[in-house]
Image 1 (tube, one colour):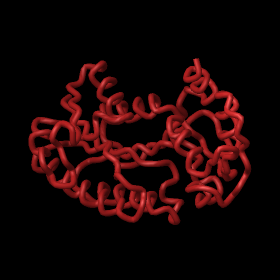
Image 2 (cartoon, rainbow, N blue to C red):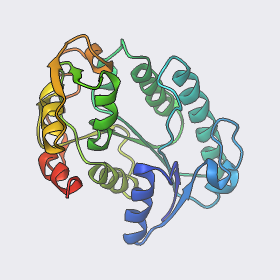
Image 3 (cartoon, helix red, strand yellow):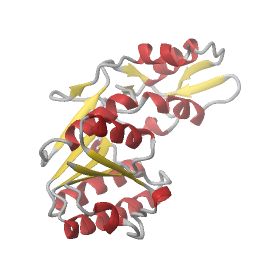
Image 4 (tube, one colour):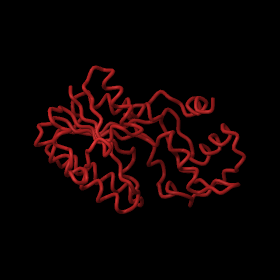
Amino acid sequence: MKIAVIGGTGLIGSQVVKLLQEAGHEAVPHSLSTGVDLLSGQGLPEALQGAQVVVNLTNSPTFDEASSDFFRTSMDNLLAAAQRAGVGHAVILSIVGVDQVPDLAYYRAKVLQEDVLKAGRLPYSIVRATQFFEFMDAVLSWTADENTVRLPRTPVQPMAATDVARAVADVSAGSPLQGIRDVAGPDVFPLDELGRITLAARGDQRTVTTDDSAGMFAAVPGDALIAKDGAVIAPTAYREWLGRQER
């Protein structure tokens, strides 16, 4: 199949393209750097010409209220162009538990993106993934100083970006789900404990202090970010992945 991967040069997109190409598909990466702009629609007709599937892996440049406008406009433009081009399957990447965290503007924006896709005329699939291992450094930086990192006890079930990419590639090459597939890592951690594991592996002497009001994930209720029954569990464990990064 010919598969257009919008956002195909990023962390997940570049791996999705590679996996699909290795499987024998004509996967073509598109992004701002290749002349495709979802906000203006520029380059979309050319990018979607002859494609059977479109995968949208673009992300909002901000995590605030403006992210809703980004996802609404970008999805409206993509679906309209895909319908004109005769695309038969649209795929997006979202977040496990995204609809259970209404206090976060970015999560509300991702729910809006899902809703726009569901309301469209194209057959669709939504892959919801848990937090990426690769984002742990950013999470630590949000509430850190030179001596201490403050993190809440929010339960998380993180997974490797490579496993996320494989899940997206598998769904993109299959029949439309007309629904959601959850994918998650093999282990659940309280976020503060995950911080301690990360710092210890890196020989970082800072102390992790438990603070249930610290950072973005403090707004997450209960086990909202934990995969429920029926989720696909990815193979890569955090400690295994972390050990490879530190070699």
